[in-house]
Length: 92
Image (cartoon, rainbow, N blue to C red):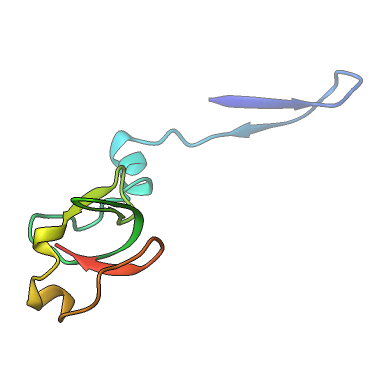
């Protein structure tokens, strides 16, 4: 693709050649998921507390849900008090 830059009087100042990216290169630029897989432990932020659990933002496309019954999982939370909005938590 060639972009030609022009001044106000319409004269061509120079032409810039843009490198066309492959789909693979574009996917690498926007790879926000990184090494995301089932069972991975991530740090997230509580964005909403509900009666049955919490919505947790871990930086991906949508929030995850942490049910209250799973909050007592000792390996992840080490008997911490229930979180409030804005609190950092580890989720799996």
